[in-house]
Length: 113
Ligand code: FES
Image (cartoon, rainbow, N blue to C red):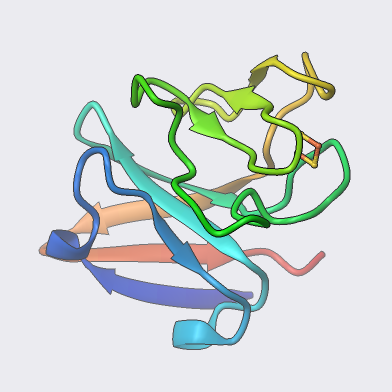
């Protein structure tokens, strides 16, 4: 298992953090965000084609800020559970990764694939 540690202040509401594989020891591309105060992490791989949501470097939030957005073909995902609500992978979901926040630290534990 790989554990990635971030500081609480690095994960702000409405500003997803993208960690490419190898950065901070991440084993895979990760996407970390705060939604409704809770930190969540997903593998940064769109269920449609497996490419990172930021394939085209731009914001990975929808214009409204309500959904995560894949820049490949515009799929929209709910931040709270990664479910795709619109786009070519409708009904599929981003792969969740364990994220725990405690004492100013965020611990992201990647299980081996
Ligand atoms: S690769 Fe994400 S919507 Fe097609």
